[in-house]
Length: 122
Image (cartoon, rainbow, N blue to C red):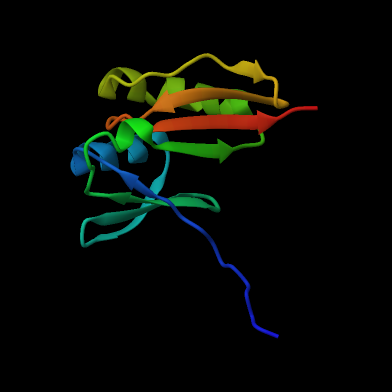
């Protein structure tokens, strides 16, 4: 029997200005664990992604990440308190109840990548 155990999966998130995007994610509370060759490895607890120093035309505006959390209100407050909205001129929506049994909000990063941050509901 083959060993098909998966350790993790990570997306390569595009950035238009690599330095600005790295600062944005650090200010948001992510840890930059390593960097090299135009790629920075970010994590927050067990969730991680690779920020790349690359952005093809239209890529960032059509790229979405989903972060499932246990307390969406706490994350929304973290975004507000971090100052990233004003500092990076990004968009953050209010928390909304979705028909797919989730409360979530959307946050854009400096390149236009959309993060949907949500919590499952009953």
